[in-house]
Image 1 (spheres, rainbow, N blue to C red):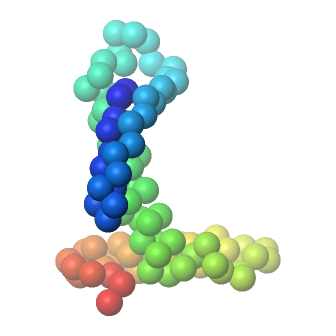
Image 2: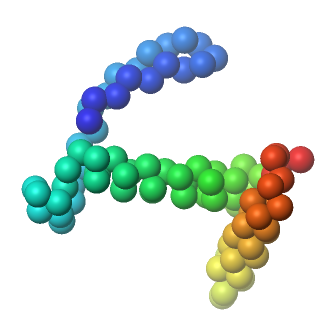
Length: 93
C-alpha cells in the first residue's frame, strides 16, 4: 500500500509503502477485504487504546502486580464503553 501523509501542524508530507502478511489465499485476500481488516484494526486502536492511553494515561500507570493491570484495563474499557453508549462527545472532559 502506498500512503502519503501531511502533518497538519507543520504541513510536512511523508510518503511510505506498507507491506502486509496474511494467511488468506489470493482469492480471499482482495484489496477490499484487506482494507476492511485494516480499518477494523485501527478503529479499535483509535476508539479504545488511544483513549486509554491519553485520557487515562495508561502508559504512565504504576500498577504492575498480579491481576491489577488487567482489572484496571477492564474497568477502563467499561468506562469507555459506557461513555460511548451515552454518546459522550469528549471523554477527556
